[in-house]
Image 1 (cartoon, helix red, strand yellow):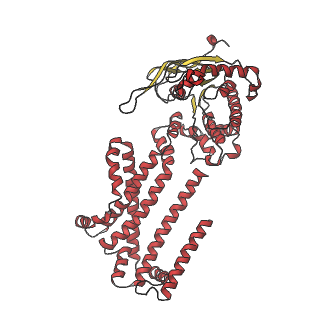
Image 2 (cartoon, each protein chain N blue to C red):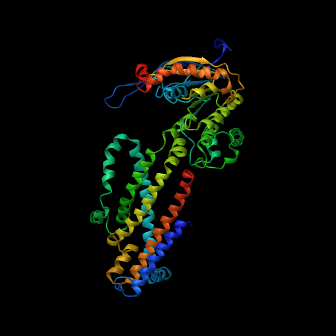
Length: 274
Length: 249
């Protein structure tokens, strides 16, 4: 569908984030200005070199931090330093609560929101089943693998029935095979919920495989360099890596990011080639 | 009981048997120490006769009051110091150096101010137990992983829910160490202050028996104090291990 006739679900306009430096040090310009439209129901990934401000962008979109300049909108309303209803966030680190069982972890947000117990049970049962955690509902996170714990965190977000899901490198700590399989689960979740997804990742292949569009960012201060559309079918899964266009898109992303990544680790093209 | 529990028991039993042999063979004269079996018999006699019931009630009440004030006061002080950065910058060096001060040196001052009653004994015990609780409260709150707080914000929870359903459970392992220390120090504080600040209580009775060369009563009471301390400590250890199991399995 052409961008012009799609509904904008979330929008970042001229968003900049500057952090105060430590005592006596300069300000840190972490991000921006960034302009980004997130369309309703799409799967968009953001890639970029380490420290380019990807996670900062996610926190600004979520309302977990306020931009230094510019505005964020979600469903036409400004996001101002508070996570709006309808946005769910999954963090990079394992954020499952070790003192709660899997079931209690998943029910956490609903219980805090005072949702009716019958409704909590229905939604938690669904989310736990959907994420393949039914046999571990009474286990504590410490009894689960890293991948399972991240599923708990996704299920905890899923039960809130968010319309926009923001994921900050949720599979960063997992091995490659588990990442591919978790990617399949994420695509399944996306199709079933119809939610809009923004995924922050440093893995080019993961971004290519999962996304409708991939936004590439520059080294710090992060700016959007280019947004590439993949034109994958909606019912795709990890077997999309066999498609001949998969390699071409991933290579294109690397071409965009190579110089920026070298910049991020303090190298230049000439120094590398000598 | 675990394998290590059995090993512990064997070590304690072996030491007691060794001491028993030393006492029975006269290597340790009876004027210095009676055999452990006789200590146990003396302890049982004291309990069964009820002759020191008032002293036990007095000491246990003092210990309970001291634990409540140490834990609650230490927690609130830790929370305040954690929450106010200026207060923290000012108070942290004091807390760090406080552990080098033996509170018992204040006993003459406390007697002058409060007289020879329960108050100075409890105060001394609280002075022992309060600071470890405050330090471990600060430590526990410091170690809450920032991502847990972000989860709270992402779930739009209130400050109240964030404190009681996220921050306190996340800090619980450290708070529990503080509680365990506060309990131990409260027992030490009460019993030791009763030696010099009281006309009743277990500590006073131990001191009295010592002054009158009544080894049987003195060692019987020492065994009972050890029993009370071990019982409290083992219970706390049991609950803390049960809790920590969830975190580390």
